[in-house]
Image (tube, rainbow over all chains, first blue to last red):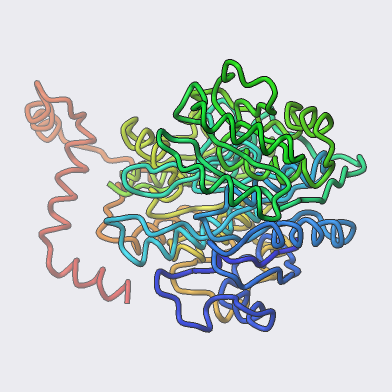
Length: 322
Length: 202
């Protein structure tokens, strides 16, 4: 089992500096501290980054995908340790870059502190979460998935949610790949291990200007974006069903300058057919899918086709989050 | 009431199934709420507890105060439960049949460093009951009901028989139950005998 370190190594609420992995030389000590994982797998540590969760971005996602490509022939599966707060972005990105994998890549990490729960319990939850992730990565499942708490989820469909004041990663119950009750139970709908060749699509163009359209949104930011080094504009309209006229004008101007505009919304926006529509994906998936598609092509027609295409099962029902 | 989980790898071997039954029987006599994969309904928890765990994302195993594993046959789930118990500092009894090769999962543990809450024991069929009882007693103030298994032929006088009939009339007790309960009370009140028991247990 390859264990990729990219954050998420908190085993206690307030770990001492030597108890988290910030540098490659910290990995061995951390593994010694969690020696029980040797009972279920032979672990090969791989260092990706020591950055904090909020600093992890496209370059790190590419590094994780490359690490999977490099090591996939020498291991049975991968577990990627990651801080929870931005884990869904990483999971979404990996689901697009690592498609049709014949082996499992499981993303997981330390849960955030749950209000009202003692330090000791948080410590246990973090350890148990990692053990569950390793158990899944050793099982008959394939593709990129997320293990968090008792849920085994498709990485393309995972979304954040607050439940009883605690940060959670969730998905539509009907799309769960499995559940952890007294052990990991994988459901029939999961992809199985196979001998197929993986399809590597490891590319991202991070020059995307991301904005959320709200009433009275400032056009200054768009104009700055047009002057900057951006290759696309992604406008998220999850709360609106139409586009303000002055915003539409700015977007037309951007498109004339060769900067494609992508509208991410829950339903089609009438009268905006000239822009690329990205419907039915989560806000995080809208960002990473735009980067991924732009990394594959700069041609507007092809970009539109890629964004409309179901790449990794990323399309969710409008009310899909339970 | 203590909640525990027992895992026994699915098997058609009669000997192993008999061992599973002994383990479950001891738990039942100790009033342990036992969830086990060896029953058709694996989960033995109140529906509100299950709903709470589903909503908060906490695995059901977290609701268990103890774990029991029959690990003679190689099985990934047995290793998982052992790793989980080590991580969660949860009491676990890992049993494997005497005379068999120690399961692979135990090779990864430094046997000298096994924490106190993990009990790894080999068993012969007649020792399973005692091992499980001892493990459960460690969990706290657990009383395990004894099963009357020793057959004893006792000849009574007519008067004693009349007395037993009289005492058990309109009760759900049989005459044998009445005698057992009476002996039980006498044993508990007998300080000399209690002292003898304490000495024997060391």
